[in-house]
Image (tube, helix red, strand yellow):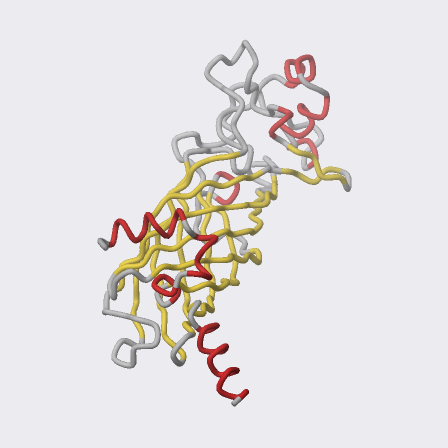
Length: 280
């Protein structure tokens, strides 16, 4: 069976893995624990944003000593803020990230869990993902969802080029990792990966300020309050409509670092065999 056909079979028969000895010996399940951070308008597009705890469940199919395909389901939180006395934007947000991804790994050194001659390898990975997010901001002790408020005039007739953004987006995960076998069935690893997105609204900040009265008339008063929070720093300050609020030339990104532990599915076969042997 070709590698492509085996991958296709795995996709179709994941619920039946427990009944397939051929796939069990090449499939690992596990978890990853680490941190997630954000790169965008509210941290000056820096990769050194605040890290928040994140985790992932994963299923990996090692169909070749150099290649593997991995399914992941991750959850984490990102946040950013710019309460800056010079810019006076005083904007901040946080958002959960729920991500499903399919990536392909290339091992720089031939590797196989349980093979004594192939104990560890660095690897690189890339793939496709889909994620959900929902930016919120804290104001007077309460958290407000920002997307429904259209803080930059999204959906208003006065701004026909600004469409409401979707809270479900595609991403391209890619990065580097390292994995090492522990015994016949277990693998530990470390991985750092970026997520390229096609949205500039992870933080609800992208373009320019709009007229507060226009926002209030078309949405609600809270939209105008949260769109321009510079008055909380300087009571006499307010941004004029058209003033830059974000940088729409660059989309937002997020990144995930994690430590992982996986186990081959055929460990359960070995466990059952050991129990039968003990019974005799």
